[in-house]
Image (tube, rainbow, N blue to C red; front, side, top):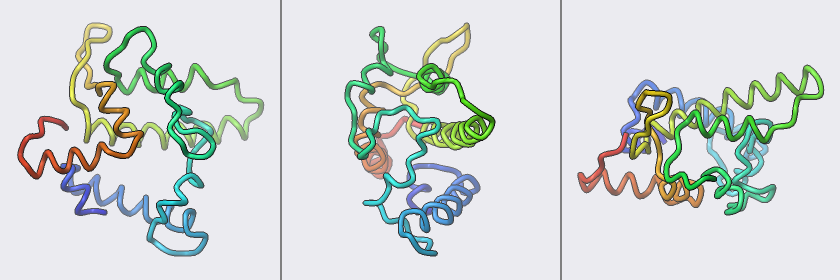
Length: 165
């Protein structure tokens, strides 16, 4: 995994931390035993529903209607801040302290994941409140949810054609 993150131009320190955390946490959760390998077909088991876009349904399938709501109003690109606002706006208020703590943990994981995604895949910019922010085009984000994006980026970088990240 570490070498593949390098191919996506994730710096070695962040790549090392991400690789270690993902394998240490997701290996046992997806395999049901103490191991570092991630079982991809069981990825739905690690979906963090406490702070999530909802773009994957309960069975792990892409939900095009939810994805389209993320881009409501004719948006053609989106920033990290807009994604987090979308998630926050669809969340009901926490009913108790435990739920709030779980949600904060989910938010921290989600923010780290989206930060890494934008490091790798940001392919445009957008002006918000007078400042330029990195953004991802709608089609690019859709390809991420459909499972094509990282292969596409790696192939672009191998061919020397990428302007992302």
